[in-house]
Image 1 (cartoon, helix red, strand yellow):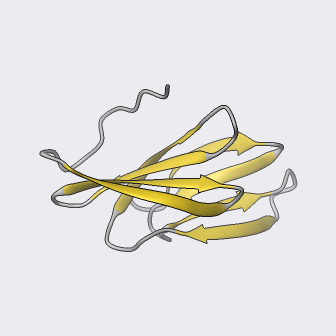
Image 2 (cartoon, one colour; image 1 turned 180 degrees about the vertical axis):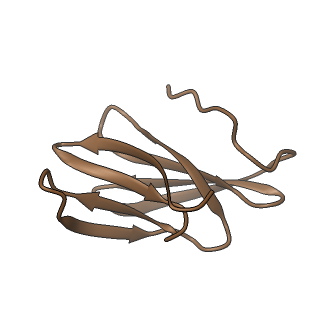
Length: 95
């Protein structure tokens, strides 16, 4: 994927996952850029899920791993890496 691959709204802010730019960008209701959180390079981030407390989980893959990045208050708070047998994420089920 190239360019924006997913989006959501949090507290009247539009949040865009930009795979090509390796980041998550936050925009105000008028479209002005508020902040960009850089994601680790070398991973194709494809999807994000907003949970009940408005934190984000961003999912991406490389050739052997799935990486999950947790963003809370516009800051990366944790990362997890899982060994995978597929090269892409085909669905996400939020809890």
